Amino acid sequence: MTTILIKNGYLITMDAEDHCLYSDLLIENDSIKQIESNIQFQADKTIDAEGKLVLPGFVQAHIHLCQSLFRGQADDQNLLQWLLTITTLESHHTPETLYASARLGLAEMIKSGATGVIDMGTLHHQDSVFRAIEESGMRAQAGKAMMDLTENLPPALQETTEDSVRESVDLLHRWHGKANGRIRYGFAPRWQLWNTEGLLKEIKQEADQHAAGIHGHAGEIQDEVPQMLRDRGFRNLKYLEHIGVVGPNVQMAHCIWLDEAEMAVLEQTGTHVLHCPCCNLKLGSGIAKVPEMLARGINVALGSDGTPSNNNYDMFIEMRFASLIHKYRLGADAMPASSVLRMATSNGAKALSLGEDGLGSLEAGKKADLIILDDGGLRAAPLPDFVRDDPIRRIVSAYQSTSVETSIIDGQLVMEEGRLLTMDEEQVLADARQAWETITKKATLSR
Ligand SMILES: [Zn+2]
Image 1 (tube, rainbow, N blue to C red):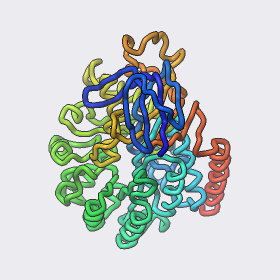
Image 2: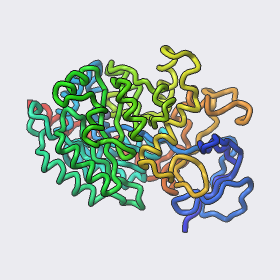
Image 3: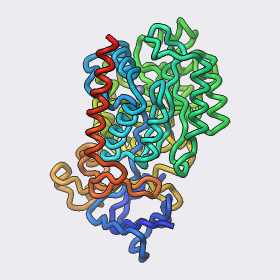
Image 4: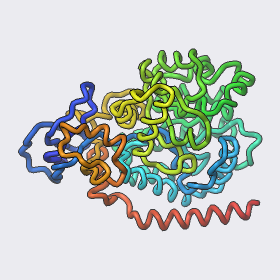
């Protein structure tokens, strides 16, 4: 049995009643054992959190670890140009470069407060991503990208339906439930226009059978709508409902270009929405109707998308954008900080855990995935008292990722006082530079 005692912190619990309180918190193995003031217990590790905030870790609900090396490589391109640039770079990955890419992304995310991710890989070498996740200590749903309808792309970006499903199911058997259940498999059909109906139906059966996820993109750009109507006879979410690929184990990124009937599908089926405000602005895709979704009870989580569509994996920046971009249309009281922090924490946890109730708040019995923030320093000052000055507003609108001091995932310390414990940061950076060299050489030779 291993135990960690966090003393004297101010806890933002994100429980159903939004309790915030000064308290101690005791972790036993992978779970929160006790939340009480003045716990007297000789733990294996004691952390003094006086003057600091303790809250559930962020869930980066839509990312592509395979793209971390491509930061800045497709700036000022719309989605269709962007896809061609990035998928071509993806096609040059080796197992080693993909491992370096995943480690770079994971390091950046742990340092900015993420304790969970929902990742979509590239076509091949997905074991490298899982290995990096396992070693990093991150909680994750991940899976290889599935693209069985891409005859216009280079051969390296094509696969048959049979191969795509077989390779995905093999990966599921190797990785689903590994690392004390910290790793979950998520089938990752890239987007409906690049996947056959047969593939989508088959993976829904597999996902249901194994309690795995399905993670895709839907309604990201306006041009998708007429193409879906022409090729499939329905708009995105109505199509997914028609073929049965909806429900609490389905997560769809973006969901910008939806009509009323598609919103109703999300509401009625418990399908999760993964909102990526920076990416959607950067690529000029549009702004999802998130306040309306939340008002209908749709679960909306928050993510950065891949680094080249952002260009970072920083949840503080994502929260800031999510809090601001809806106010222009709906008024200054739209998207209060508490809603935004909920999207970044408990809503993400709900998407990541496929609706199971073991993640996303500081409560006895829940998994110990949490972060400790400093008092925000100059950026959050003056903040003399957490009770009177509402740190939630400051976390969303003033804090930066440099305030993340400590991270605990599944009861394991992965970062302490700003230092990664599961990865050598200098090595991660050196390996990323080397991997990018390898990819640029391969890209140049293939021209
Ligand atoms: Zn994406």
